[in-house]
Length: 295
Length: 304
Image (cartoon, rainbow over the protein chains, first blue to last red):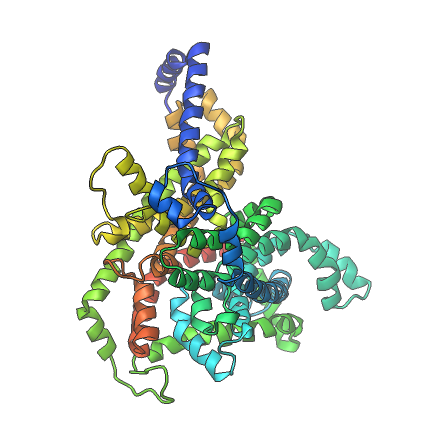
């Protein structure tokens, strides 16, 4: 890569630029100060929302944002939870997200199993179709899915969202699971087959348990994705009592136009489930994010 | 490699002619039907709708040829939306990509409290875009928001209106999107860095490579696959941007993007045919990146 002459000069350069111990310690301190400053700036928007949600609009208007809060009250959270119906919206989000999650993981693991374990004519074309589908802009589906949902009588029901979420995420889930399943050595399955297991039992009792780590990562990631979806929620649901929390928040914004303490309180409540998932399943969440990219 | 490739099709064909193994088809059939009904079919149907004047209500849309597209290319809102999407794209492939990579390089070294710094940077990723939109709309609020309160506090008499300023609004929205994206890119690069064989970097250090040379000639080329993914994701995400614009400005203040433009035409103005035409344009642009990505996947797949 580098010629000998280069190497020599580089070594000299490196030796010369090697900082003294005090110099290095100074450098480390600067690094930490810069990083801490950047982190604080990074988190300020969330901090702003948190502080605002405990204050009153009068307090903010009179004393300004940077003043000491007059009092810290939970009233805004109570108002957002009850009057602004965030509790209802959150429940709706769960009712949609959980079945969609099970649907997409089950269906995609079936496909992934076939694609990973069998040689058949349409194997690669089907795989490529799902891969391409992961990047599809949903706008291309928006109007026909709206029409289809209407035609099936599912418009303004939970099922409308459950179906589209399941179907739309099939591509990504299949892609990830298929690549994971291919790494499982086939000897395990040959032994089972000799013992007379049928394919579905091999899939259900041997492959799925082995795939559990990937499924967990995928489930964590997909939970946040489906839970946080906004587009389908505003297109396929019009009844306020069925709205998932993302669409509910947009509604809340319209209702409480300038009452920012209630709006931010609602936004924070809406975030709670994904924050909890993230806090407890962080490892899986990160794994899930990187699953698709190391291929 | 070639010899295997030559032998296997023969063996497969020999087997198929006599007896087809239906088992894999039983596994794939149900998901495939779901996928065709909800994804593939609708994708194709949008192309048809874009050639009609469907209003969303009438049962039989009538065919109008390419009229929607002709109208689109002279529509000023379309130009505005396309420009904004391109701005979004340019920012997305530069700032979060380099920022995320830089962060990943910093946090890849062992450091005290590194985990907490990392968590802080990728925490915006778990927030929904609607929550991010609301939080930032509040931060940008011209009279009481965090930024302008601060600016007035330090003596700026007439701070900008941010989302209320037609020249600034789209950049404010993109900034909020970048805030979320940096952590994402950082995670992808951190995973990529972890996969790098340490003997390679050690060898370079033994050879006397400077830190910059190590990065430029060893680390960066090894990260190329991650960089491709990051770029593809950034491009696709910037093209389908919708939530933030819809929540923060509803496309007013010259912040229109293709996705929101389409939504408004289709669901507020009942011009579903016209909306479909916008979707087709959006899809065609994305196809460049999808195609590129797919080509890469196909290539690695056929190497096996």
